Amino acid sequence: MNHANMHNILYPLQHGFRARRSCETQQIDLVNDIANNMQSGLQTAICVLDFARAFDKVSHIHLIHKLRWYGITGEVNRWINNFLRDRTQRVVLESASSDEVPVASGVVSTSGVCSRAVTLLVLYK
Image (cartoon, rainbow, N blue to C red):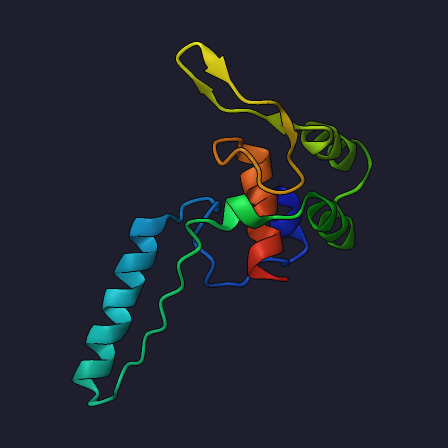
């Protein structure tokens, strides 16, 4: 995320995948903003978006292009591209398994680099 921070790519209020920020700090900021608005007699409107399945929907091709657009090129871009390319999946249940099928979208949500790349794509598409 150093590249994103150095080039001011991330929205200043972005909390995910940033140093010294987390879901908890975002919630603290939200509660603080609501409390300040209440004390000032202001109304607060909240729009909640569920990105829970965002990792399942990301097009590999769009992700690689978006990373290039943000200046993430060279070895890092090639590494992510190689990680995502030619992926397959199958279902295994007891001793039976399905045929393998190609995976053209979605990333392993526990893979740190790809999840951060998805953040750039999803939030700034």
